[in-house]
Length: 288
Image (cartoon, rainbow, N blue to C red; front, side):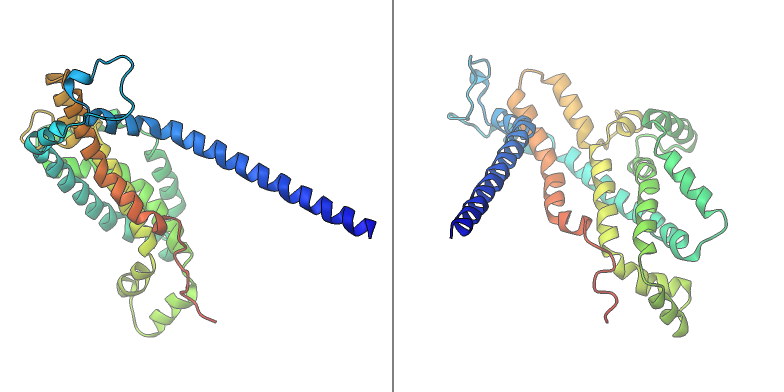
């Protein structure tokens, strides 16, 4: 009886200790998350603060006397920049997937000669600083007449995404069972038909992952935009914010409202696509 009582007390103490450690880890995680997200909250707070309250000491932690003037300014002055960024982002996604998906399929399933060397070159390509690539594109576009053009910026942004995307597609498509490929070949499907009808539908998670990163890279790009389209008729939102800060460095509620609106598309896409990014590409493809 005493042994059972002691054993029960030991289990209870162990359970309480484990629960305490769990709560402690949760508290630390929430604290670190709060610290990292505080700048985002402050950006939202300032975007709703009136100009006359900006220099209060101490500043208001909540916009008790808030205003939407900053967001009205965004709708009046920043919409063209947002529209241009959306076009550039979607164009970059389409071009990146169109180039990298067939390349990943070839490296994963067709195994061409020199495929290993190509994979190494793709890794090296991601190490090249963006400013060096931007200057190279500037020299090329100057001769082709593509400076200050949306298509030129789409091509430039795609060069950042394609090497990474090819590696992602290669890794995903390598996991597709060879039996499916062999069955398609037995049914008379060639490599192109197999790629379009078998490989691409099964690579939906890879497509979402690549599209997400390609869009985020192009949406947040400043180096290529500042080098290749600065001063042109179609500038992305990164340049819109840059010019707005330079021209209106006292209107911080409008500046922060612009930053909030510019962050919304990326945040929404991240929330909607997060479950696809980590998912397995071949889940449920082969049934017993």
